Length: 103
Image (cartoon, rainbow, N blue to C red; front, side, top):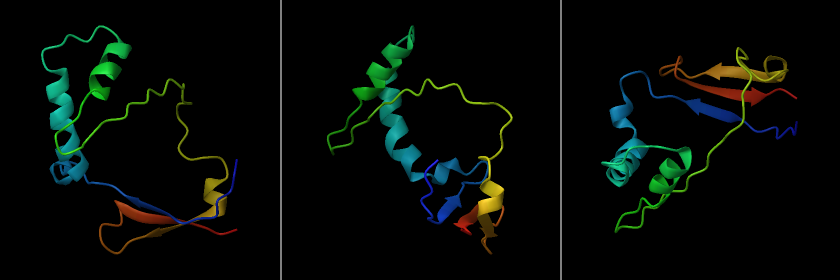
């Protein structure tokens, strides 16, 4: 594992607030339109439909399928808690925090 020694800022949208997520509003309507009326029969078909999504203003979609099998039940990377200090924000600390390397 490569150690970058950089601070990581984590900011989540709380439940039921995805309506404020600008990425969802800019991207998903166009992807939905590109897939409209099509019965999904394969992963390749879905990838192809999403990849052809574009707008007149220049939005284009890049699709990558991750077929890796992830270990279940694992909460954080090994050694993360020992090498990273978690600093919670004053505003919505449950949703906004920083992981600061201690080494």
